[in-house]
Length: 255
Ligand code: CIR
Image 1 (cartoon, protein in one colour):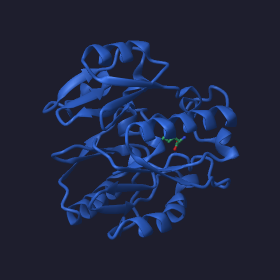
Image 2: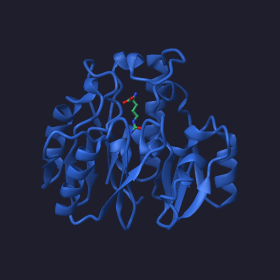
Image 3: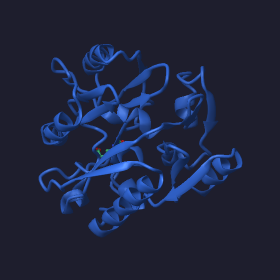
């Protein structure tokens, strides 16, 4: 969770048509843009250098740069997103990654993998199977991670949950913030676990960056809980991006 750099992408006006499982109405472009601007400012406050890529009108979900690639200080991996409308986002981000990283690997084969399904911890990179990441894609990703010298493991995502990281985030090297439904599967048994209060499940996609934990401001019980545990919490508005199933990790690639 110590990062020096992030990449973000400006939302396109088409972001209002972003993919979602349940329709609770479109987000507004202005609302998404404001949340994105706040995110960039909070990242700078947290001490990271922010590279801002231009909006892509042809790709409504392209603001969520976490999904088409995976980055580490050792190198980057170009993924193959599991949603048909998002596959070509990889081509769009490739030149930037080639310019910034010496090593850029392509996911071999035809399997699918979204960055939202990947939780990087100190000991291993956890890859969650989901409707977006299949077994072939997860295994291909393991081969790439091997090349970068990273241990990895394939785990399950609860039924009906978009991404593995929709339901969890890293609070520090030993501690995971998780929904009860994901923790129940036992994937985090080797970690200390902080469980999201019932009814605030989308708060699980929090983001630890250097000294702070960014948490959606719509989740007061989670904020209070983390605050009491001693974390330096930065509440951030995620109401509009929440309407298209996104949270805080989705909006950046971090290393
Ligand atoms: C999608 O369904 O692909 C977008 N509307 C939301 C992506 C969220 N990304 C993430 O959790 N990493």
